[in-house]
Length: 141
Image (cartoon, rainbow, N blue to C red; front, side, top):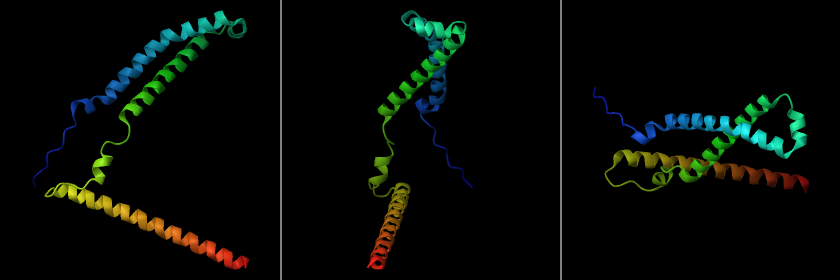
């Protein structure tokens, strides 16, 4: 039996998890230095805050560092998802494949069959709902 060659992922896709980890660690290092600065600024600007954290400054610095790290990650996730957008393969599933491309033709047929089943199911549910509403109206009369 002949083995088919596996498709290799492009290099930029292979290293995405590692790049994400490096980014998270970098954000952690940044947050470690930014957290104490933010706590100091809050203490300088609010005597009430400074009185409340007196004796526990170190814990508040760690907590603020964690919050800053989380906010940096969330901002990055939002920006990346906005740039990437939807699934780029989605539009190709809707298009008809080229003539002679059997693999894509099979995928297209399966996709269309799945859509047809979904539509049929929705129509049946709608008809059942209408029948139930009509039955309720007859009972009321």
